[in-house]
Amino acid sequence: MIKANKIKKKYPEFELDLDLEIKDDTITAILGTNGAGKTTFFKSVLGLIHIDEGSISIDGVPVDSLSPRDKENIGVVFPDSIVNAYLPIKDVRQILKASYTRFDAAMFDELVDRFHLPKQSKIKSFSTGEKAKFKLICALTHDANLLILDEPTSGLDVIVREELLDMLRVFMEKPGRSIVISSHISSDLEHLCDEFYILHEGKIVLHETMDALDQYAILKIKDGQALDDAYALRKTKTPYGWAVLTNQKQYYIDNFPQIVVEPASMDDVFTMVVQGETI
Ligand SMILES: Nc1ncnc2c1ncn2[C@@H]1O[C@H](COP(=O)(O)OP(=O)(O)OP(=O)(O)O)[C@@H](O)[C@H]1O
Image (cartoon, rainbow, N blue to C red; front, side):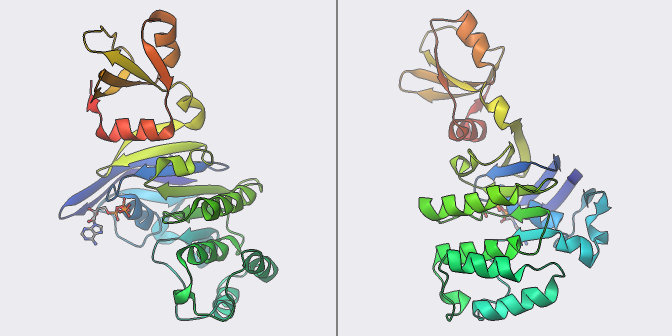
């Protein structure tokens, strides 16, 4: 489990300020627009940057005290990370074998073959999708129990994206594992994650389970139509009046039959929470 306890990281024009827990046996999505602070959060979790306040631990161990053995339990994908892009796959395989005590060479070879990755070329010449697949293969083949994946699906076509998400589903079949994965496209992770956080300007603006998302809806309110705003979270102006986000769909269905209530997708929730007006 990752516990980020009241952490703050200040840059001249940005501040990350959050408190969250990433549970075991769970896929947790961190959603946020460009610049929301996703990478800053991940770097803090991995101890790659120094936080100004608060503390972060993984399975109870403060991140600055993680042993090399503890770090083997973490598989990481960062947008710009590749062991060495000037090497071909077989050389990276050697580095992984030397670095990780539980590196599974057979699994590595099987995945490289399955995804038809180029075997002779240097990784820097791989296509975006090939690089993404290769980075995930590296993260998956040293028997980690926690994956920290920063935008692993960014820039991928829908087929490659689904292939990667399937690899993550297979990873989760072993009990005790967890994944924390970020994206700036909320619909990417809608059918993958168990819970999600929406990060905006360095702060968590929403934390929900996917089950709870079922009660989110968009209320379509015509100009002049009255609204009981007891469970109204955000609103945006529309050509017909207002679109209003609620997390109590049934309350409005039961009590206000004259209001149009449409199920909210993760995209709807994300857009409304980030761009909508507070009520
Ligand atoms: N080393 C740094 N010095 C100053 N500002 C920084 C530094 N690193 C990040 N920032 C700022 O922190 C903010 C958050 O950046 P971060 O990379 O965490 O966002 P992100 O959510 O990962 O965005 P994206 O989706 O675009 O990758 C940005 O405004 C960025 O300019």
